[in-house]
Image (cartoon, rainbow over all chains, first blue to last red; front, side, top):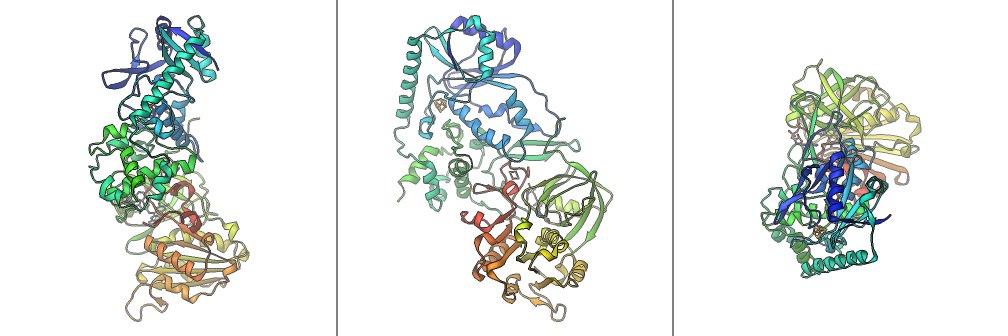
Length: 332
Length: 273
Ligand SMILES: Cc1cc2nc3c(=O)[nH]c(=O)nc-3n(C[C@H](O)[C@H](O)[C@H](O)COP(=O)(O)OP(=O)(O)OC[C@H]3O[C@@H](n4cnc5c(N)ncnc54)[C@H](O)[C@@H]3O)c2cc1C
Ligand code: SF4
Ligand code: FES
């Protein structure tokens, strides 16, 4: 695959061209929080880089609430500015929704009709810990196109045929990237990786799967880690890999609605008659950590946590998964 | 053509049979032939009310109608119990893995059931009876709370006439003179059977407490981990391995089960709720 240079002007023309043909969502925001917003040919200003959006990218393929019995409307969509940690989230949701005996057609149709233009992080927030989870603050796979900011414009790398086709369709805007520009990209990437490592220097744990497996019986889950949990479910609704949902009958007969569900709520695992496999907050939080760090790696070979830090920012009880793992790893 | 795995097909409720004070069997006629393997489950719904997982209790060789035996346990099951017949219900499925019948060929098959756990076991038993010459022995140990709580009362009378079937039953307690079989927990029936441990499998389905002590007892007797089959219960929503509700450890009960060997679950610290 190839890497091109687009001047800022050409980049803007490129996005305007795309907005005229596709539903394009890019990131907008002030200061700290970035939101997904629809871009149009007339109003296409957005923030290409910085760091991840407030809402995880999975929401485009697996919305908070959706009808799941009728054929869904599908529109050709481009997501612009997806960050490395969000891109990695899709490994988990893809594995759940697309694999198995039955694929989920609602997720599959939206995923198939979406082009992903990812982008490098050129800043971060204290909650970011991609590097602790084996990730990097720039995309290395899973994108159709990837953007890196360089002096006076952007480098665009193609990752798939769909990405190549977009580049070809706009070939007059795409120039060859120079060696100097590629070096500039390397510098940014190295600098960002070092910054992320420095951001997480207090955390010395390295193998979260081994920690949660070995510390299953620890008292700390109840007495310490889950103690400040107020059972608001905010962490689960912020998470980029959570795929759990609940089906409910719609008012219209024979229609069914699914909504995101949270394993931290008490009734999640309860069965008729009241028996509950995870009665306490500690058991539920442990199961959540095990789900992301042990069970999904056992199923798929990768972590279902990519270090986006949304759960850390969302938590009312100031529970920080990095600190929890640190406490467990230090426990004798 | 678009197809959603979450959409139910209509099934007419033909008949409701009273089994006990809180268990009824619902005879359903799906709008088209419905095939399942014994041990697989379906999602049954009252349109607009709710949906829950149940295991067909009828023979898989019967494809025009399916029986579902349901204990009144809460909201949906309560509303199902109020139905008289003639209504249209929704079904999806079948889901999960059934019992691996071929693996039982030539073996002594010991079935351990309790309460409404007899539902999937009836389907299994009917499947075994249909090819009874393929098994060395078929032994059923069934426990219920009291004589009144025995499900499929009339069918037991029929089954007791089949010479290849060894049936043992227990009730937890009962007034003197009302039960001439064993009184005690279902696990005590296991003391009365002698099996060839080198050539036997056991299948367990019942309330969680029975699953726990039943499988312990089987291990004590000398059954190996991979020769004990358990029908696991869990909260379920989708039935197809997507919604997450039924997960225990890295297993999804709906997709990887509901039938598991003890071997498959032994890494889970406490699999029985
Ligand atoms: C694979 C499988 C097979 C089963 N087969 C049978 C059978 O053959 N006969 C039988 O009587 N019962 C069977 N059950 C149990 C049956 O599904 C529950 O009794 C039923 O879900 C209770 O629903 P309810 O609305 O009446 O109960 P409530 O307690 O009112 O349920 C309230 C809510 O709790 C949740 N819930 C509670 N229990 C369960 C559960 N087990 N699964 C999913 N959600 C639950 C649901 O969200 C439900 O809406 C089976 C369960 C499983 C998992
Ligand atoms: S966690 Fe890493 S990849 Fe995600 S936004 Fe933060 S710096 Fe970027
Ligand atoms: S019931 Fe949804 S994953 Fe098993």
